[in-house]
Image 1: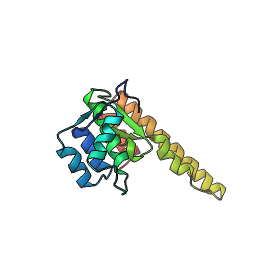
Image 2: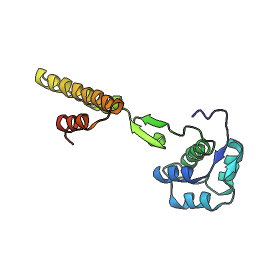
Image 3: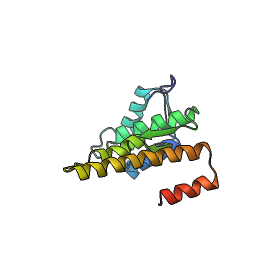
Image 4: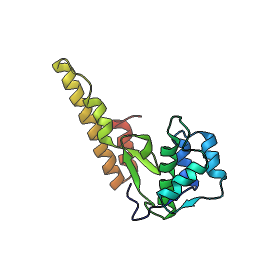
Length: 161
């Protein structure tokens, strides 16, 4: 992840939240949180810290070094005030579920596209469903540009939840 020239690692609330949401073992999170050192100048300092805490020798899933490192990078990003209002758009891969997060419509629609169609009737149904996804997306974008009660009501009628 690009970090605007910063190469540090930070353990803060955002980092710990990321680690917990990615399923890092509670004992590992507790070690990182309890240790008084929370800022590391570079990857080498961060790695030494993980080694000192005994985290690099753990052989569990998810990989504690990977998840802790991703969390500490996210912590550094937040500590430097980078990406304050950014929404991370992804295909729902766990490492991208940070900050304000949204699923990419292309990835949602791709699940419909992957459905096997064996008859013309099935193909037409698939194409209709794909067009409905993009129609709803266009309606949501229009509502976001100009939200009002009338349009909200239209969305609820056309696209009931």
